[in-house]
Every structure is written in C-alpha cells, then in structure tokens.
Image (cartoon, rainbow, N blue to C red; front, top):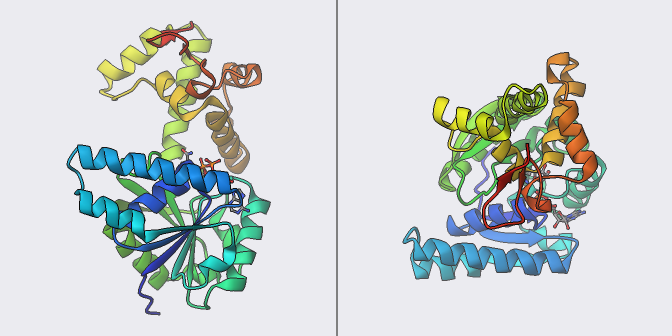
Length: 293
Ligand code: NAD
C-alpha cells in the first residue's frame, strides 16, 4: 500500500483535537477539523491561535510558520468536508457508540485508501477497527495532553492492522516532531497502565494515613525526581478521568491490584475532580494550591 498523507481530517475539536490539528498544521499538512458543535470549533481556533502565538513568542516557530499553519486549518460541522482526506484521526468524546457511528459516517465519505486512527485512551482498537470496512487500515494514535508540548504518541495496532499502515503512521508521527512507541492493544496501553496505578497507590497511601498530601507529593518529587507529585498530577488529569482509567484496568484485566482506591471514588462522588472544579487533593480557590489533607 502506498499512501502519501497530505490531508488529515481531525474529528472532535476539544482539548485533544485542537492540539492534534495544531501540530499537523505546523508540520505542513492540510487539516480539516470537524465537530458537531460550531461553538467547539470556534473555541478550538481561538485556542490554536493563542498557542501558536505563544510558540512565536518563545521563538519555537516563526511568525510566517504561524500564519501558514492557521491557513492550513479548515473547520466544518459536516463530515463531507473529509472527502479528500488521506488520514482521519478521531478525537471525539470517549464513548464507544459515538466513535463507531463517527467511523461509519467517515467511511461513507472518504476514499477506499484513506487511513483511520483513533485517539481513544481506553477503548479497544481491535473492536473499533472491526466496526469499519477497513480494519487493516485502522490504528490507535494516542497523543498526550497538551499535544503541542508532549513529545510522545503511542501507536496501537489492532489485531488486523497491517504493517504498511503502521509504517506510514510511524513516519507521519515523526514528521509531527513526535516520538512514537508501539503498544499492544491491551487496556490503557503503556503510559496509563503504569502511571495510573502509581497515582492510585498514592491515594491509598493518603487513605491509609501513611503520609499527608504534602509529604506524599514532596516525597515523590524529591525522592523519585518526578517533576510533579502524584496527587498534584491526579488533580491536573482530573480525578474522574483517573477513576475511569482505573476502572478500565480493573474490568479489562480482572486483577484486584487495579482496584480503585475508595478515597478516589469518594472524591469523585463529592464532585471534587481536581483543578477543573477548583478542588481535589488541593484547594485551588486562592493564589496558591493548598493541600486538603
Ligand atoms: P473533549 O470533551 O475536550 O472533546 C471532545 C469533542 O468531541 C467535543 O468538542 C465534542 O463536541 C466532539 N464530538 C462529540 N461527538 C462528536 C461527533 N459525533 N462528531 C464530531 N465531534 C464530536 O475531549 P478530549 O479530552 O479532547 O478527548 C477526546 C479523545 O481523546 C477521547 O477519546 C479521550 O479519551 C482521548 N484522550 C484524552 C486525553 C486527555 O488528557 N484529555 C489524553 C489522551 C487521549
């Protein structure tokens, strides 16, 4: 199979979709950004513009690159805008039925050669691929948040993904300035499989009274050289997201070592979801985050 990727469709203009559109446009790809919500598209363009301006200020890209990149992005609420895409990356809401429906709509408009990718954090790539007419041209591309800053993309082959699909996407990921790693299609792939049990263990450490929020985070920053403490990181990711990923590991691998900590469950039930709600393991209502335990 030889596919030259020139035009990339990105579906979902939320946190991840706008970042993927940003890096693809900076790399010189023509980008069609699709969302059901015009408001989400307007916000995405404002975010991309702000982030490109920041990169110009930091001298990471030139003013000319910024202008060119913005010129490469076209937004639409219609899937028909994807008809010339060589690759479509889906980054819509984390819901299997929504994603399957999107891929069905995409397959109806794109050419038979077009490659498909999903940025899902937890849904089986093999299952999503099987719902399309081209499982051999389907792959997982798991970008990290925030996409313009984070260097890694996990590439996940479904059982039917063929080698040329993997190689084309690997090269394209490198052109985005990212490093890829290959992960098999198991729950939470590599990064979240390792990171989330560590965060969950930090919550158990707090729950059992081994240390306070401050001692746990300071211990891991200074003792393990982590740039952020695990509880600070949990607040940044969102405690609901942390719990959802622990549930995916617990359900998918059926091992009690992935049991979500009851304190994490309680915080989520209380609506204390971290930074986004102003309170998690820290209280964000003042100038500086204050540990809550
Ligand atoms: P988000 O809620 O910020 O954005 C999702 C967007 O999808 C919304 O703008 C919504 O309007 C749009 N959407 C929903 N249904 C649609 C449809 N049928 N057609 C077109 N657009 C539709 O979510 P996000 O955080 O950007 O996550 C997107 C995907 O990326 C999820 O699969 C998530 O698991 C994955 N992911 C998230 C992170 C993260 O840290 N947030 C990291 C890696 C991967």
